[in-house]
Image (cartoon, rainbow, N blue to C red; front, side, top):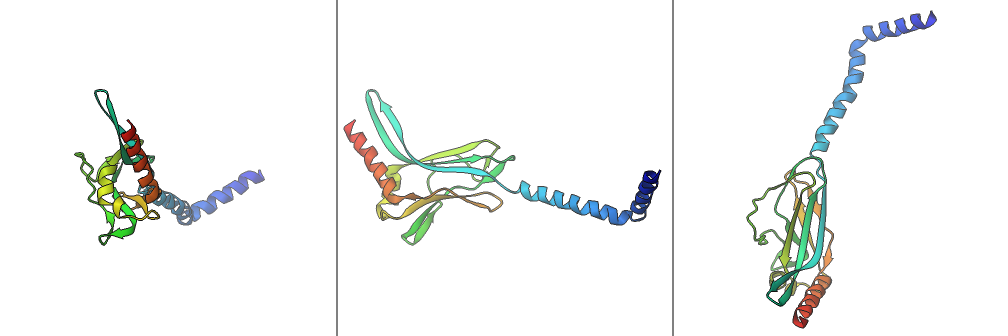
Length: 179
């Protein structure tokens, strides 16, 4: 019997103070809604930069061309638009350390939409990079990519040493000469 009386008092108190109760419930609910809105703008990418080569075959002849590769994977839960990847350097060449006008050699319009789980990959041929950038870098200089989403958030790849890239290109060229 005391329990019913006690519960009745609690319900009366809550009813008489319903504005206070609803604001107590409403504030956390609004905070949850705002958190969901903010996290919807949060983009998640897995970005890899790597060295590789393209194998070209013509009849019995085979050639390996060195490449610098970038792969961007949307690991988020919603589609995201990315801007054109930008090549960054640790040191300026001809007054610039950012190269956004890299020839992607494909008919992709940027901003480019990445659906959840979708990836964008691009390989840059070593000869093009060597002529325009690598020949002007010191061995200790670093190269990486900057990827920006349409929310303005910046994402970076790991940095590669210019000496490692030059060595990879040299090794691939030696393999080409041996073939």
